[in-house]
Image 1 (cartoon, rainbow, N blue to C red):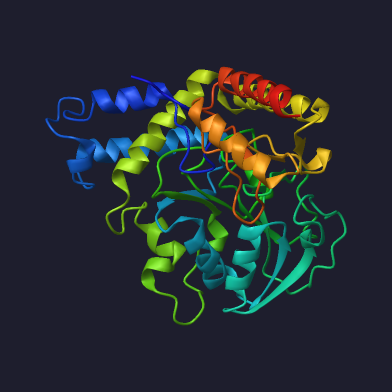
Image 2 (image 1 turned 120 degrees about the horizontal axis):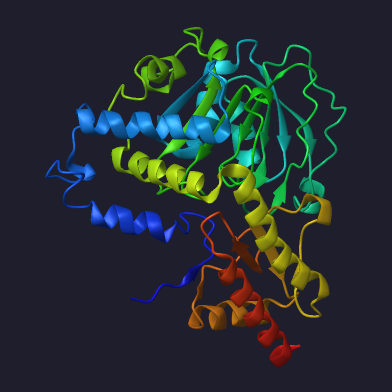
Length: 360
């Protein structure tokens, strides 16, 4: 069996240990005589799976008791609508637009009320995080929204915005479980799991209980009310059962690695290897302001589109997959999530050095 180094932005690399465990349990999950794929989500065996997954996530993130953990579907894109539907009591919210996904969330929110763009980095192609220490946030705004790590542009909030007492809502899809977080600083933290936690099809929402009410915008479907899912412990309808099972295994794998403090240190080491090379390279350069660089997503270019295309093609032939940058940016992007081993980054840098020697 030959495994490539997969630098995809999502769906993305998963820990081999988790994949092997899942393969071993595929036909007979712990003596049940069936796969988790075939199992009733109302069964005792599945009840244990979903409850253990929640308990392990709570332990990893130190989630307080007054926050609910919801395993939902529809990805981050569905949350773009669920958030204003459930939280926009005054029909006003503040959005900090630092990339495509924050922009899409902002545009979606406009359907439901007044979405106010209080900061943006669009003026420099989202290559930095704006100063959010003293924003002009409307007093009657229901919440302040950010996308904490920008998958496409490779930026990350190193300090959370000063919300001036307003509820903070954060899309953490591409930095989920990559470092410790203080959950109490947020009203809602959510993310699609397909980048750093599990297979596509699950979105995890961590929401403070006081934000879960029946007071939602008129016309909000039952399925799009947080209360519906909170009251039913994420089992209002058939959940993405197999995806949650894999997420649960990833949570246990993370605990074995030493938790989020240890994984952050590992991620910093990986990112340093790649960024150090980009900073000294005569051919490649990073596209993000240094202080705002993401540990997870690293975009870079040569400055020549033909050379970029040649690099991506030759890298693929050498076993480095999915390095082509997002269509809105071009160039290259290496996503180096938790499950990317450090040797994958080291080998990528070796290949980049060789390519530079041959093409600079």
